[in-house]
Image 1 (tube, one colour):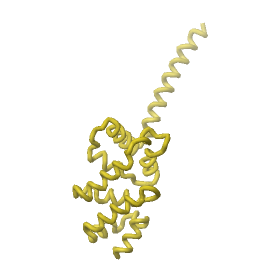
Image 2 (cartoon, rainbow, N blue to C red):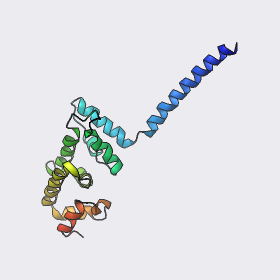
Image 3 (cartoon, helix red, strand yellow):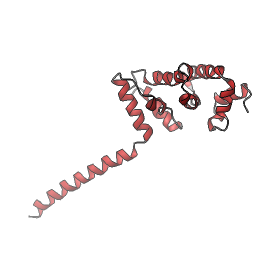
Image 4 (cartoon, rainbow, N blue to C red):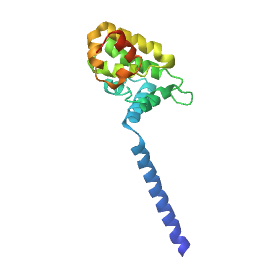
Length: 162
């Protein structure tokens, strides 16, 4: 008789454990990861990434940047696509071509992560942004934490921003 009662109890706890695991995974997924996942799904389905999702691809810190740049790593599902490069280009073009002011500060934040293989392109966009309005650039970076990160720091000094 006890064997008959043990099986339903084991099944009950197994179900309860799987529900808790799903809930924990959802809690551990950050807003940035959710946004990144939405953007990658739209990209893979060849749909336009809405501007509110695009602007939120700009990382706030290095851990978020690692997730974003991680889409280029060989073991990532996006590795064989141009997702990282195309979306960064779209972010910068919102400032340089469309003149969308909502992307101005985020684009500078993104440029502050310039490093390695993509640094040259990021710096080209930075030079273009500064060339559009040097005073606006200097005002925009004033008091921002990323003013201490190259290449922003270098260009702030070069342009005598105070």
